[in-house]
Image 1 (cartoon, helix red, strand yellow):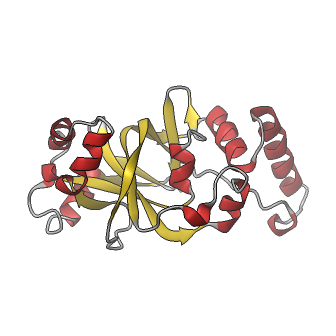
Image 2: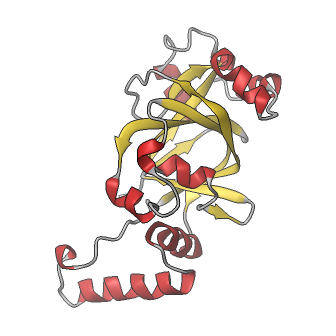
Length: 214
């Protein structure tokens, strides 16, 4: 079954009351369990000149670049955090805060090389090691072994969200998450001071959002 396509315009219409009929004054908030945003902000998922994260759903119908705020949820994925415990302490990361800014430039299925790279980054392998591990994993499945008998690797989702930059806020901004499934919304005013500190022009950000108003 192909991944579900979710047009940005649909998400905005569903959130119309929340953004108070002033969508250029609000920015999409991209939620992630801890420590997923930290991996992005530390360049662990940088391929060439872009950063990539994966999802099971495909955001469509947006005009690139689309401003995005990065939000750390209250939940920690302990199996993932353990992979990075020698690099950073996930228990000390801010929870319930917007921690950074990025711009989404492309959404598409991952190609084979990107899958090898991201799988390797997720599990501590080089690209060549990732190729061998993935091939052996599916070879073992073909031979009749059960998934429960194989190593519990962390797998990327099939859809890649590609970002042009990753900017960490000097002071994370508290944000009351409202349980949206795909994206939530925060006022541009609430993050303008932090954007200016990291040399992101709030007026330019507002103009980018204006292009995406349905």
